[in-house]
Every structure is written in structure tokens, then in C-alpha cells.
Length: 311
Ligand code: SAM
Image 1 (spheres, helix red, strand yellow):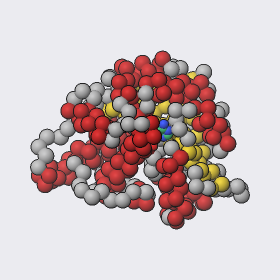
Image 2 (image 1 turned 60 degrees about the horizontal axis):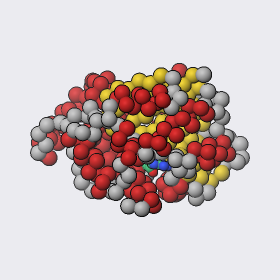
Image 3 (image 1 turned 180 degrees about the vertical axis):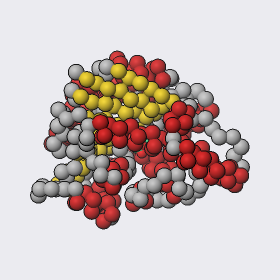
């Protein structure tokens, strides 16, 4: 595939992620009143292991984000890299947990779609207006900048352009900063993701990076994911780095981060609220019967990674 087609394929993964999340929300795995405004309902049921995987992913990532917000008393900023149709800004506002400013970055084409949804749907635009003070709310088809929420259209492979655009929206590199990449780095070559990690480590004096992505793609689930990427004609170079938790840790340590920790999703799953796990298991038994799936698939091929840079 040519470069543009490969990028188009990567942009398609944003739709995949939100459709799966919306489906899991619609069958009660977790609450998200906002996702319905960003994507259509799935045409078919999703397999229970997919729902459970997304549940653990969303729960795990927001658990770490909230821990950072509490530790900094919300005197911090969040930069969500490759945010797609993520709804975290609205969910944090509902919980009174907004950071000083919440930034999102994605390809300009994805950002345009997100802004179009925000503009046309009051349940999305109202919370942005409510959290805005002062007069300069900037909104055009490719960027939005309010006092607490900003969306930037940029390519994560070009960090100087990224930094310039974020700074135009008042990014403050001296605030404690949480960078989040949920299923994003895998779509770049090892060199490109290394550059992004290096940029983040050298730009923010106090920062943490949450990376969620697949590891150990040699098992059955990994093969299914690779086939899916191939079908979409995505660039598979990023898969190479995702061999093990150790290779993930090493990548961060080699690119300017001082400590790195990685845990696999089986562990995250065991930390989930037990009431939810029991509820979702009961729910799953039903769906298994309906859908005829016999065994739950292992999620040990996903990882959640937490790192810290302190200089
Ligand atoms: N983080 C969101 C989530 O978990 O729901 C979306 C995940 S989706 C699998 C990957 C996202 O990363 C897509 O929205 C895609 O457009 C974005 N992305 C991938 N490579 C990018 C790049 N080079 N520049 C900007 N965005 C990128």
C-alpha cells in the first residue's frame, strides 16, 4: 500500500476501537454516556472476550490516569496521543476531575470528524462551554481550543510540528504532564515511536507516559490481530517491538525515560472490581451459549505500561 493508503488504514482503526467500545457500553460493561455521539452502534454482537478485553483496557487506563490526577491534585495537563473518538474529557468533567488542560492529538482528518460531532451535538459541546472561561474559544474545522480542552490535528511522526501546534494551544511544558497512547504506537515504525518517546522525555521535566498496546503477537489472538492489520493494509513494522514486556520497558529506557514498569492484562483483569468481573462473567456465560464460543481467549497479549521521567 502507498503511504496515504497505509495512513488511511491506520485511521480506520479509530472507528474499530470506538465501535467496540460503544457495543461493550451498550451491553453494560461500563458507563459512557458520550460514546454514542461519536460512532454508530455495531451491526453485529461482539464476542464476549472482545468486550471483556475492552473493559479491562478502559478500566486499566483510566485507573492510572485518575491516580495521576489525584497525585497532582489536578494541577497537571494530559496529552492524549492518537485519541481518536475518546470520551475521557467528558467523563472526567462529570467526576470533577479535569486537569488544568486536556489535549488530544490525532490526524487532521479524524480531528475534523470529532469536531463536527462536537459542534452538532449539545451534550458534547455544552460541557466544553461550561468549563471555558474568557472569550477566546477557538473552533474551526481542524482544531478546537478552549480553556480546559483542546484538540490538535497533527501527525505524531513529526514531533516539532506537534510541539508547535500544542504550544499554540498553551501547552505548558513545566506542568506535570501525563502522556497517554492507547493502541497507537504499534502503528508506527520502531524508529518513529522511539522518536516520539524521546521527544516526550526531553520536552517535559516532570512527566509520565501510559502506553497500552499488544505484546507477544505470536499466540492465536496476536495472529488474529495481525491478520486484521494486514487486511487493512496497515504498516506492520511496529509489531516488531511488541515482543515482550521486557522489550517494551527497554524501548522506554533507551529513549530517555528513567523508570518503566509493564504489566500484562491478565494481572489488570485480576485487579478489576470483583463485583464487575462476576457480573461480566455471568453475562458472558449467557453470551457464550448464544454465540457458541467455548473458551475465553487469553488477554495476556496486551499490556499496560507506566513510566516516569523526573529530572
Ligand atoms: N486511543 C483511541 C482509543 O483507544 O480508543 C484510538 C485508538 S485507534 C486504534 C489508533 C488512533 O491513533 C487512531 O485514531 C489513529 O488515527 C491514531 N494515529 C495513529 N498513527 C497516528 C499518527 N502518526 N498521527 C496521528 N494520529 C495517529
